[in-house]
Length: 238
Image (cartoon, one colour):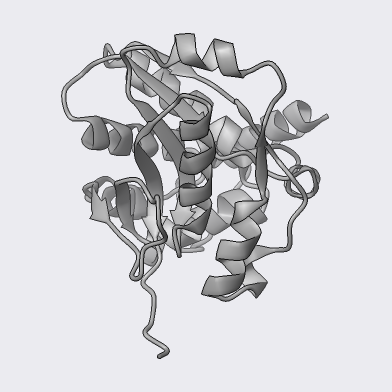
């Protein structure tokens, strides 16, 4: 059912006069749900290193396409919360640029998307990062990168991170994931001589990425870096 709904959403983005996912303007020509002006703004973004302050222990190097604001924020919200599944393709292509920027030279890579909880999958009619990872891999392969996508982790039920402060996010992240049974030996072979890149959509405190990196390292997969689409600008509330 999730695959059918995703296909329907992509088709309606192309055929119906939906509003632009970036600026919410109606009655403008769209391609995969984004108008020409917003496409130009998104394509002007350049991946760069980001790091939350304070950074949680074990957080890998992080590279983001841009700040979580403007058109990038609106497109991500449209994709995750407004059912615009057709945006997975352009966002996946943008995430591929981030992966390339985090790795540097072209070489084999192993992509590990942060898994979604079962409740999030139901609410969003699919795993949004799994879709992004698929399009990211396709884009990288088109550019000549040998890419493999692995899903070694399972997300466990946890509270909505939007309702938590920094300490709450860190505590929730510690027990948020587990290694899927029987994956350890497979992962060791997959990660041989290739950097492991964790994929996520947004980095805020870095607690989730640190927890994922810690779990993967314990399974014999040291994380090279994390590639994300957006980084929030945190305010100092101290």
